[in-house]
Amino acid sequence: LLKLEETNLTRDELLLKLHLINIGTGVHYRAIHFHPYYKNTFGYREGEFPNSEFISYRTLSLPFSAKLTDEDVSDVINGLKEILS
Image (cartoon, rainbow, N blue to C red; front, side):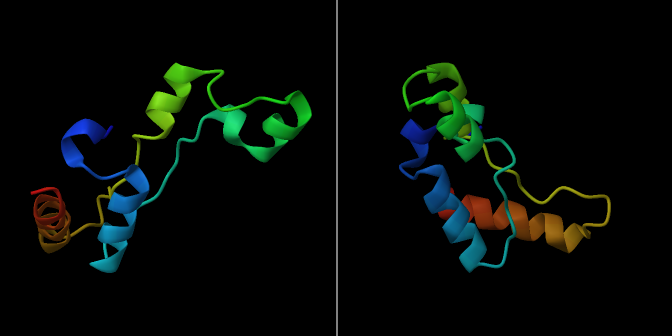
């Protein structure tokens, strides 16, 4: 969960910067009312669920696996440090 006010980056900007240094990330939580089915079927709009949106805009998934080598873990940590510093 990103502290956007401290990073000066949006979640998507951070995702792009990580991608550019070959660190795969993802967005595995998106507020349900942003999904097309719920948006189109029920007419949900941005602003209706502020707590869900708060989390949705600030959450990203970093590489996390028992198969990561120590070097992989260091790459993720160092990449984040570089981008966020």
